[in-house]
Length: 50
Image (cartoon, rainbow, N blue to C red):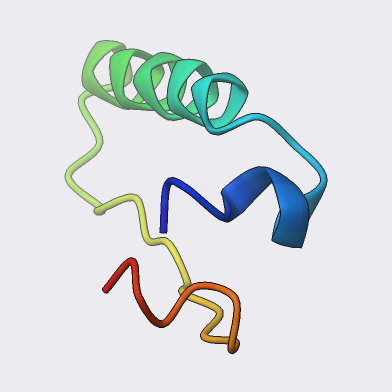
């Protein structure tokens, strides 16, 4: 989840969001139809987020 992201992944969620937005922009410019996939890690620290 957003609240525990930094602790689990050691990166700010906002940094991730900027990267995703850039990737989406590039995919549109390349006219690619493949989706951008994300994985989800479930731990005792983020169960309340979901």
